[in-house]
Image (cartoon, rainbow, N blue to C red; front, side, top):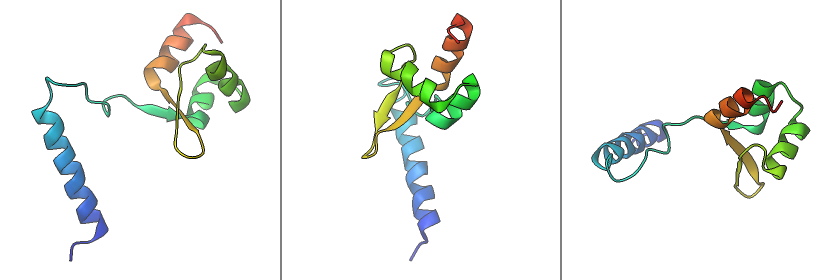
Length: 87
């Protein structure tokens, strides 16, 4: 009976093969790094409450998911935000 790590490794391998096969059909969503709210707040050097306010007002695009509404922000959105000087 294979261990959990082997099973997960096999899943990741299959996922990678699937993405290679369908490379022309869709964009690989795993290519971009998604930051947690805490990581994004640290990158912007702001309080996490300020980051949430930016996301709620639409100044910084964020995605919420999961039963607790976890927030994730693309690293490229953080970069654009810093370049714009909205801080």
